[in-house]
Length: 316
Image 1: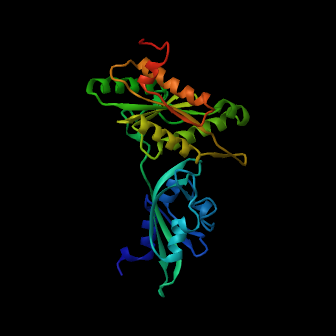
Image 2: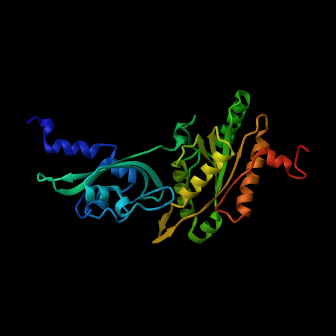
Image 3: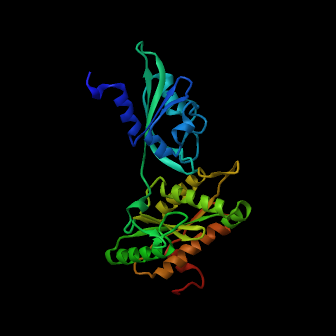
């Protein structure tokens, strides 16, 4: 037998893969958890080996926060009928944010062909597009926000100004979403500054991992994020905002034994060719204000035409 064909070599290869690999026995207890699984989920081996995967360690859910249970759980379904499964879902990172993953689950059989367990491989789906923006090598204090590791307000405003100028010159439309964490100040007063900073970080990861990758995501203010989406009309902005709002309902942190989460209000608008940055930001703020005044946890899209038609608005 070649040295490359020994069980030790195969195990070492599996251990080192960046794709997550998990193996469970018939009782669904985790017996194998590799480097990729640690990195994607945030859970180290010592915290998962020997524990049932249903204890929140490998629970999958969709963008509506509906948990995949029983026949919908890919690894359980593979053990039940002996057929492989392939799904695109989310799993909870240890720190609290949802991670989009592509999952492949398949049964493991003994020499007699009996199912004795199952294996699952999972890899991250689309990643936060902010990793691809110009200046992604920013440092804290030099364009990078310390709490969220996203571009800070100054860089975000500068980037938005450049995008607006380019879009006007080349007739390339885009939309904006301003996403605000509802009642963050009350959250900070109740749970403390560290908890508030932690939930901000979770929100940043969650929004960056949304169903449709954003062109850009940056910090806009203490409790707000700004997202840029290319070629996005009012209907698409509404749908994207609703998706992000639903995804935020899947996120949260455990703080001193309590499960904490926040909702978001979203204001959105598409650019109007030739308009100034001030007018664009003003309209975006008005859209966000409508969501907040409506009770929060909602999405409002305002067009330039709607603002122009308001009594007493500029331009009349």
